[in-house]
Length: 152
Image (cartoon, rainbow, N blue to C red; front, side, top):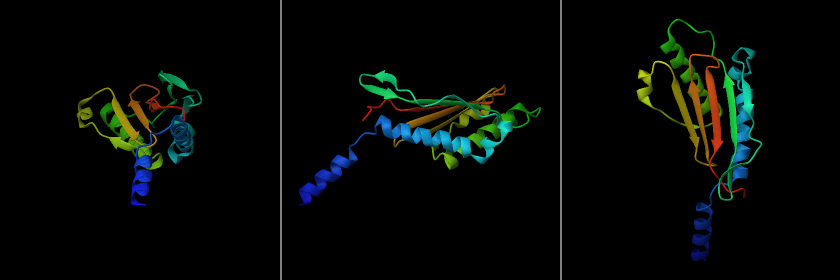
């Protein structure tokens, strides 16, 4: 009996995410972003550039899905560095709190004068999000991708 239980537990732990599971989560992220209080404001000009509705081949019998969006961040001031820092913080908070990504932080960005990069990850089901924060319009440029995964 213990042998059967150990076998069942081991097989459940070794399962890899599927494209279907990752796509479902990516779709939820898209809807969460659109429903977010901040991004629902018409002044943010949230624009979905690419929806995650096509399988993109990335390896033998593996595919990924991508969603891209752009948005604006509030009125700009004469202090570009502070504008970028505030926009970065808002995006990090949105991704971690509303969309539930585990954020990675690169403190060397504090020295960057013209951009910021926000990165987050959901290991299960296998999604990475990257947002480039730049001073020109659109200020936020988001790309979320599933890992290169089998369909089922």
